Each structure stands twice: as C-alpha cells, then as structure tokens.
Amino acid sequence: MNTMPKTGIILFTGNSHRELAQLISSRLGLDLGHAAVFQKSNRETVVNIADSVRGKDVFLIQTATKDVNNDIMELLVMAYACKTSSARKVIGVIPYLPYCKQSKMRKRGAIVSKLLAKMMCKAGITHLITMDLPQKEIQGFFDVPVDNLRASSFLLNYIRTSIPDYTNAVIVARNPGSAKRAQSFAERLRLGLAVIHGEQKEAESDEVDGRHSPPPILSRTYNPDLGFEVVPVMAAKEKPPMNVVGDVGGRIAIIVDDIIDDVETFVAAAELLKERGAYKIYIMATHGLLSADAPRLLEQAPVDEIVVTNTIPHEVQKMQCPKIKTVDISLMLSEAIRRIYNNESMSYLFRDVSMED
Image 1 (tube, rainbow, N blue to C red):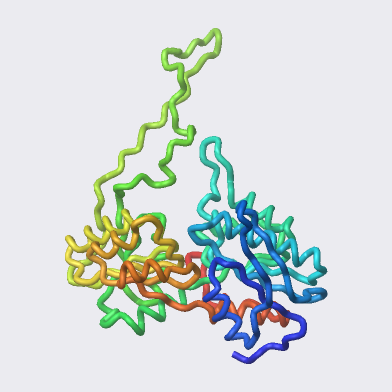
Image 2 (spheres, rainbow, N blue to C red; image 1 turned 120 degrees about the horizontal axis):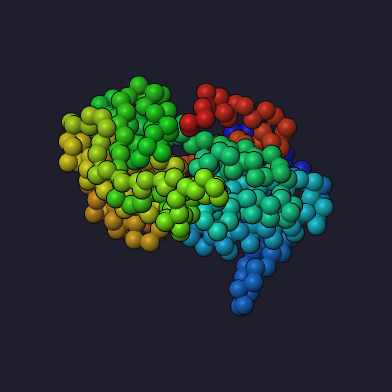
C-alpha cells in the first residue's frame, strides 16, 4: 500500500489491541500518535494527547476485549479529548463493536447497543468503521456514517488456500439463524450446505421476555353482556433433538458464524457432525472472543482448526489451544482509513458483498 501524507492525519490507539493498531499504521506508512491512556489507582480512565490534533482527521483504533467497559471508556475519553482539542474529524475504527449482541429489547431490559451509539456520537465521533455487525440494523442507531466492513473475503481465501481438498467440503450453519451467512459462503465456494436444527442451549429468541406468557387470569370465559374474552394462549415451543439437515458423511465440515464466544453449542455441533461421518471439522468466524474456558473445550473437542480474524486479540487463547488460527484483516481496515481520509468511494470494499455476508 502507498504511504500517506503525514500532515492532516493522525492515528491513536487505546490499550485494547495495540498489535492491530501497529499493523494498520505500518501498512499506511504512518507512526502512531503519542497518547498516554491509563487508569489511576481508583480505576478512573485518564487520557493525555501529546500531539497536536487541531484541524486534523483523527482515527481512533480501539476494539472490544474481555475488559469491555474499560475499552469503552478509553474510546469515549479519547474521542472527547480530540473533539475539545479542535480535531477536524474523529473517526472511530472499532473492528468489534462492544455490546453489539444486545441490540434487541428483552423483557424490561435495554437496547444497550443503541445507548452506546448515542454515547459515541455525543463524545465526538463523526464516523465509524467496524466489521461484521451481527445485526446490520445497528448502523441505524448511530447519527453518523457507519461503514460495516466484511471479513468474508479473507475467510473465503483461507478456505481456498489453507484447507486441503476443500472442494470436498460442506458449509454448515450452526443453527437456522446463521443459515444465510452459511449459504453465502457455500454459493461463493460452489459447495453444499448443511444446517443443524435443534440446540442444547436455549436460543436468545426463546428467552422468556413476557410476550408469550399466558395471562394470569385463566378462569375468565367469554361473557356476551360484559364483553370479556380470553386472550388465546400461545403454545410453548418444544425444541427437537439436534439433527443435521444435509449430508456430511465423508466430507469436510466447515461451520461458519460471525462470533465465537461461549463454545458449548459449537462443541455439540462438532460432535454431532463427527457422528454423522464428517472426517474433518473446521470452525470459522470473524470475531473470536473465546471467553471463559473456551480454549480448553475447543482443544478437547473433535475440531481440527478454529479460524478467526484479529479483530480481537487472542494470543493467550492460542497458547491454550494451538488449534486456533488467525487471519489478518488489517489490510482492509487500513484501506478503509486511506479512502476515508482521501474522500474516495468506499464501494470498492463492498464489491460483490450481499446482505448475507
């Protein structure tokens, strides 16, 4: 990639993923800006910007890790510091958007991703670059432009170049909800598709939120004089046993999803695929959170490789589970930064991208 002029642009990073920030700055031919981001003894976040940002386009590189709330505060304080220091633009480069899974109303909860979007905009972020949002509608929570990049081209290239005999593979959706993404992979690779139906773990859509609860008064019947009428009671769902829809016998099974966090369902899916005759099993996702004891469970599972991108740091997890492989997506992020700074079209990065990717 061609180096960029150093006068009107500056990159800063928090403490969430300095390795990715270094890769991006190296590809752009820039040095990271000097900023001290730390916590005081009382856990308050402190940001000291050492370089002048007046009239410049500032790009803040910060992702979400296990220390998600601290990562958010670092981002908000950095953005506000740049805003009040007369930066021309403040662009957030957030490969994995924190709280993106909390984008729906549940019982008497909150749509936290919308709250976070309002906080970012209020802090001074004028543009957002992120990657593979689980729900594309999250872009509507922001009052600023959002570029939701896709990592599917990097994962597809990994399949073609690093999985021997991938033409004998079948793309597997872990549940019906991820079938569209799996179908997109299958169509681009000219491969078959399988879907796992029925889960051991309760799906988010089946959580008790009050909408399907029967009314507390069941003895009341219809009275033509008073007009009382019983509201029809929704029948309870019964999940079927886990089953594979599609043939995986004697094939390579590639499970695709957007996020790998708690891995119990992935492990159960891999065991089922092994029972059905798959001789190799891969798990691929954009974001590898791999929380709690996920590395240990994956190491013991009948999985050959777990392929994730470096939107989230997972070096510690890789030491616990050598099966974890990393795909570098810094090239796409650096190209997005270059195009935004030069006021070039972003459509090149979205060519041949569908809503299912």
